[in-house]
Amino acid sequence: MFAPRYFAPRYFPLRYFPNGATGELAVFSTVIDAIVTQIEALALVGITDAKIIRVKRPVNPLSGAVPTDVGVQIFGLNQRDVGGTNERDDTQYRVGVICYQISNEDQSLNEDRPLLWLQRIRRKFNYQRLTGVGDVYQCRVEPILSVDPFRFPQNYDVSNLVVAATAREVRTT
Image (cartoon, rainbow, N blue to C red; front, side):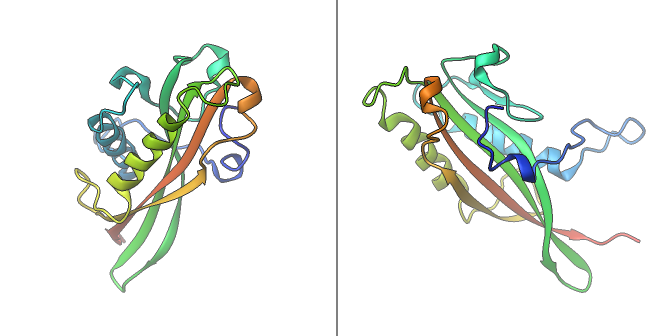
């Protein structure tokens, strides 16, 4: 698995596709799409929009399933209840973001690039509203690993973070 073991225990399969009967999208799916769109708009140095991909779960770039030079993988991690009011629930939608590049175990080649990607993503989302998703009133960014030491011997610089988007949702009966 491409993501460090920290992601595995929290991962739950999600439903990403519209409901066939109503055409309604899950809030979680809308949150993920909005995060993908906004990361694409950051125009991260060295990454084209085609390499910013949404996946159901992290993919190992060594498998050949994704572009193997640089990229960003974005996937649903889990959701949790974080409070609310008498009429509404606050639900946190946690989205994993993995930035990677080939390093060939070089200690200095493009050393700053993945750190700059993380910085720009953090500044875009931390303590901000999520544009395009009306229920989300705040995002927080939780860094996991600035540089994953387990991927470096496999010739990759990998950085991970979680964007936690908190939505206030009306309870239904």
